[in-house]
Image (tube, rainbow, N blue to C red; front, top):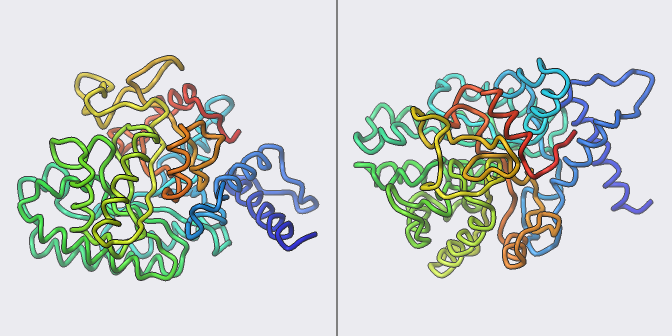
Length: 389
């Protein structure tokens, strides 16, 4: 057996053990033979982590297993474990896949290190080489509130303390961090410069960790500035202000519903601008959790008359449009021909996209909390992508 084959066999064995943990399975002491379902999940987890081509040789997300968290910090785990039969299979299309956990001001300064340490341990399941993913949503105030008042001195001090504790919790973990989803709200903040300095400091802090890759949020293919569309120059300017020089790159579509093709083309335009302006060649990640039926923000239909567009209606039929369903499963193979992307997008993704990740959370109410079982099941039924089970 060659070295490459031995390495593949070893990692596939690890993937099978990951799948068993994710499925809540305890293998019999007298047998190491995985169940068919564990084999299927393991094969998908392994494939997710493999680069399709070598156009992106520095990709920090490729060539390693991706952790699947199954614990009390995740809103999907409990409903999945309690479900039975067809409901369990459908919710498993979410629960059994690698996803990014969001951390923000709702976690106290004194607790964030402990929570992240436990999250890492559960995600890795004893394998310290496994990739873990999280999103940092810590700036306060943010979103609409950021447009009406600046951060106080106490909030700034708390932000720095929290970030230092987060960094201590991450340590040497192989980590992908999406920094400050909905970054375009920066443009409406009365203290834009102060917030930008804090974000730059935080980006530099986390990027200095030995195996952490930071991707600053850059909005979406249809959103770069509050109340406006997505001019790549405006997107690049926001990234320059918030420390992209320290980061691996940027992230797209954390809360919007654009498709991978639109985001890849938009992302390449941003990469070109940053390279033109002396920032080197940056890479990016794209959320595909909710883009099975791509649409622009003006096309979004709320789930009910009382809801915001963040709680967009879900697809209830495979042929339905202007609705949310699960998109391309998480993968470090964004240039794979298996994904059916247009050829120009496929080539660009192979070169500049480190991964299609699931850091969006359409199965949660308002993409925030709580878990809504009916949303999850509807999206799992109508997605054009097969599940891990």
